[in-house]
Length: 160
Image 1 (cartoon, rainbow, N blue to C red):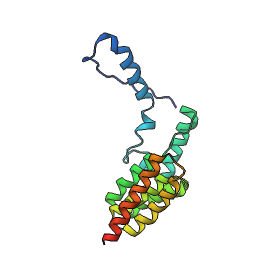
Image 2: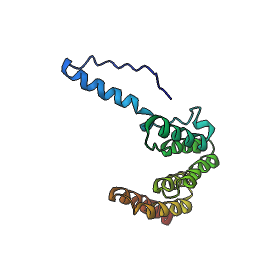
Image 3: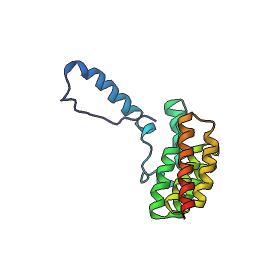
Image 4: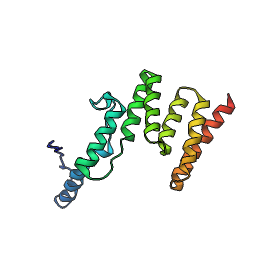
């Protein structure tokens, strides 16, 4: 897969000596943009579903970059986009992510967030509890973040 997209950026506000550095940085960001931005929910690939998203990122990993590129952000983007239109479809997409990545704390966290947005705090706490348990194997910042959300959802549930 060759990406022959032309990219232009005007650096008119910068001085001569900074242009080489800015140009290189801009070029690197453009080369790796498909990793960091993810697929929009309305992209041709995302509209085909989770399997198509995973296949796309597998192709990027094997044929473009030579290292693993995660599809998780794009799956989450699709799930939350669908959640607004069809809560059941959105939840199914996010649950597919859990099924595809059962050891990923953030996959469970996304499902918990979706349930919380839908007002189902029982399921939000259930999925966030699993996210927090899986988060114990992560850096302390991630552990604390997962615990923070669990505490928030638990408090909301108790307040009902």
